[in-house]
Image (tube, rainbow, N blue to C red; front, side):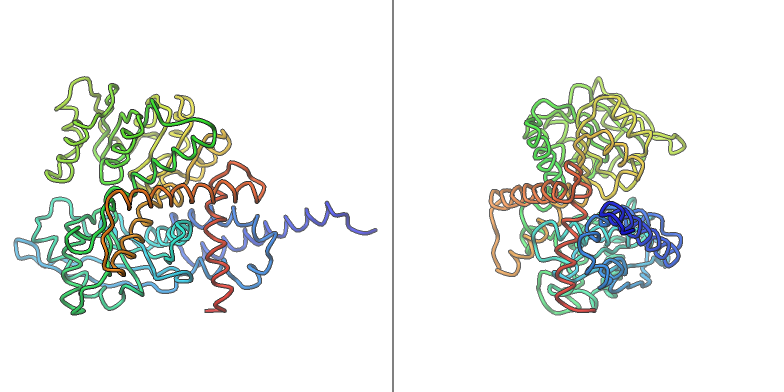
Length: 468
């Protein structure tokens, strides 16, 4: 008796499940002790089974296996001398993940938690994120386990100069263009660029996030936060709703969080929270522009702790962060929109359950992979508006791409021009995710939409370029 069409489809699906399972087994065996990298790959592989069913040629060409494997991993020591004359040694990294559609592009992170697995997860995510921006950029990521917190400007300068003394030979405006990330702001980018210029003897757009008077772009510091809000606005628009009057939870208190808050105010929303590694502040009356300006001065100039916000303003609740808790109290606050903007896996399944119970129906990720697998599943099962990081926070790298364009043309666009282009890009990213999700049979699932939409552009370029 012949096999029915349904039986054939079922066998094909089972076969694809076997392929995904064996692929993940190989990834975990080849990359031990890198749980964040495993998590990022697994989420993408799960979405891409829908594509590989329809396009077996990608599987035959080993496209997914090649995207998972970095094109190049650079690991080096970074010796420097602190203010007391002691020699310190840190570890430096650059993961050049995929250059199929353009030069490697992605941030540098300076934080004690930095290790190979975290940077590989970030570089892998960056490949898809950069593809979604519509700009010609490959994916990369780098950084060091150096902690700039508590260091003097002179110590940070000496570290940055030592770091760039090795990195400069591996990067360039047509090869690899790093930017900032956690722990790498305008100060660090300035020191890194100065050392590159000194070593390479050229003034070129090798880094993004530069100062405005030496090649930087307006809106670049604001871009990730602004983009996450633009993406949330597009998600709400797809259901005939808006951000006006929505009560919003924002985690973190750095660059992304600050500008998320600023753009929420532009949309008439009410941001109510900030956090840092010590604790959270909840302001039921809302964080207005005056309070936001105070937070920016606290964090960017004085480099203080968010607890001081509760000491400064009345009616504010502060809760110290206890890492032994099985939930984060920030995500137990009643609200409608959430913008996780601190770090990876900051929302677990308990947090997701609390958020859903307390009225949250929009999540737009300002950080990279801030939700665990179980938390993501809870949001998708609940059918809320959920914007994954590789789509929702792509505004930062998109504006880095715009900075690269301005550098190449020796031009500087106005604030309004850059902001308008950023908003257009975020609208285009949402459209891609929304339409791709529907096209592959999972309408409304923007995780699938982002993973598949980002993959297709890179995969087709790799097919064109042969086995390299």
